[in-house]
Length: 373
Ligand SMILES: *Cc1c(COP(=O)(O)O)cnc(C)c1O
Image 1: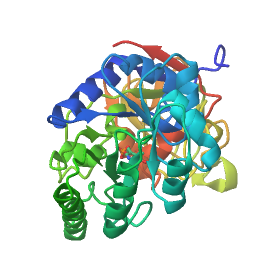
Image 2: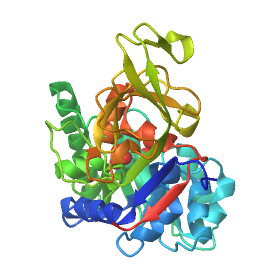
Image 3: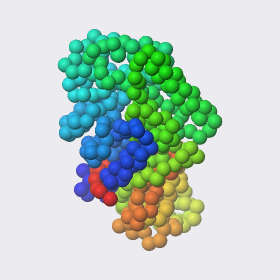
Image 4: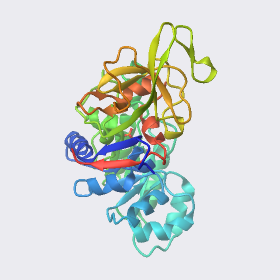
């Protein structure tokens, strides 16, 4: 794939390392897991893990299949399984491979206690501090912690929780964030009073950037890949762009006033204009919901999507672009050859989505090319 068609995702591994160091600098005395689930948010999990291997003491993925892929590529670090395990049958492999599973259901605690693993298992007990997705309530967490702590083959017990609104700037978001932090403090104090030390892993990217949810571990994901972790009103950081999705024009067309462009007459030329056809479509992961006006760079100049995104192509307005040619570098998001950056967050806004879905959505037929900046 990718020897002929010009579309590709260029991945800057030095930018990834820069962003990891920046996350680590925010984490105080805590250490940062590098979250490389979902193929490292579309960037290529094994390449990214190897690029971070000397910086990150551990990695995090969603499930065992992703962890196995890292092990198969030679990664020997501990790997957290953020979604835990789905059946007790996974426990021998978890023990053998040194995976650290999140534990969020009573049956999982029962299964851990009943297991006879060849090696102790490092379990991460999940507290539902208010997101109401996964985890035990505060009271249950205190109970389950004691059960796990009493088990000789459970070692390195951690408390993990997830913030629902660490990225939001409005009052309701701020208040929920504070309530969730208070819930964690309450559980930790109750366990401390029972004589337990409680290493915590609290912060995702936005909470890492905020710097006020310290713990033994942080688990940044999106900031490693250079997208904005939270509302800039909360805090912004100088991240570097890691992925550039780039292609070329494969046709340049003139439209007369009134002529339609693409499927469903999605765009009608309001005046005589020049449009470009780009080799990139929704089957490559470019969002079909992109609105007219969603930005694109052509030779470093800002252009805009016009008409509907098709499966393999999309169309852009070249009317105000100086000297576009079939060789012009087209950047769907990321960094143009002249250094101009089109933030993936800005493109995501045009598509009514978030940077996460765009980056994880870059499909398998788009070749990833790795380089050091
Ligand atoms: C994906 C994930 C993260 C990373 O979140 P970012 O917002 O990308 O930093 C952290 N914790 C859990 C439990 C996750 O599932």
